[in-house]
Length: 268
Image (cartoon, rainbow, N blue to C red; front, side, top):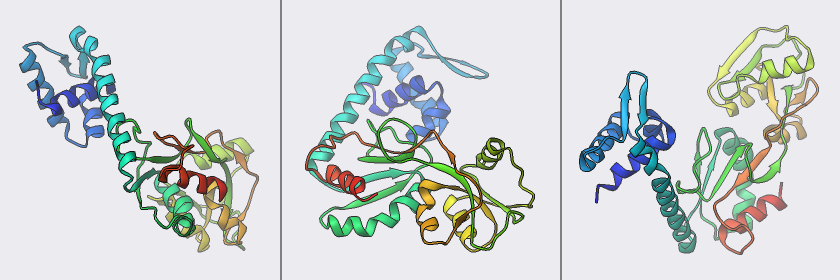
């Protein structure tokens, strides 16, 4: 049988449409993916991809094999997830950085107090993981199918006393928030453009410090609004993507993941 890494590289490249995307998913270089695929082709003495200047395309042989390999690796992933759940180890949570910092972290002390035997690990990711294959028990992101934890809305916010002519703060994650809100409200911002932060949580801290106006995500800054650290400077624009929890596990049982999810639901 060919090496497992070669089979994984082929399946990922075939499913995602290229070596670059496969490399990002597998956390290797595109060259490593290409090398693994070439080794598999040499084993088969047949081409699975045609190479051209703009990338690669599946041959009929590769296209015909894709569904079986995807099913096989999905089945392997599901078996590993089941094994992890039965072992009862650490609960692994994947979350968007802003959600991990502003929504989940403030809830961790109460979570540890309510479930003292629970062991948690939180990983910040820019996009949702593949819960069939990646070793995560829960994922917290905006949008998608799953358990809705809270709705979200956009609104300009600032520290008390900061006016509409203050600098406009933004972040690299949601750089379209300002244009989206201004367009919807048919409004203009007269102040200068302020700092662009790499993390949304940093932009929230700057807004709380009076550095300018931030386009706030209500799902993440609700505590700041409740205690007066931030105040709204305009109407809320409802967003179609709520904060959603997804999991590969049965959430109706008594296991650690199910108990964690119930606590989050009961303590919004």
